[in-house]
Image (cartoon, rainbow, N blue to C red; front, top):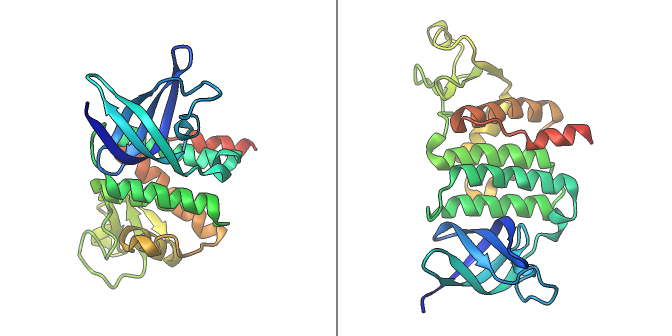
Length: 248
């Protein structure tokens, strides 16, 4: 028999049969993994805690012919604070939707997993604004996936000492106010200096410093105008799960 030991986060669960589940684990070395959890819905099953949405666990998986199956699991972090709060849960589900769309099965993505775990930690263990956590997640995720915008200066002329800055979705980066540059994208979004600094920080900071800033409501809304549109254009999908929060 062949077994795989791995840490993983449950990012999807589907009931099957009378008492089973098929779960999707997001693991550091194997990326997304589908696994059968036999009897996980039975009240006395040892797999109950480790097969809940957002449970981060140590798993021992049996490598079957068509699919992995969970042999045993030990919970490392259950993220109860998220699962028991509708607003936090909605944000977490937004993160997971993006990952399920962009990360393929058996595609190792350790930096994406670290970003997700850090984002969930900030969402569950701190009082940081969930909307700011989401904007950071969206832009840093795209940067990791190869869609990092050019934000060290003007992507057209190359100047770094620019003050009047716009974000060009067409060119994927900052452009300055020079007429020769602005004519390349007349639909570029003008940015305040606060939004410029926030975007630069999200794209280029180290993981340990990624969430180490706050924004005013005005600049946060401005940042959201960039990240949500950039996400939609790069992944070619409208992510609407967070729209639910406007109705609360």
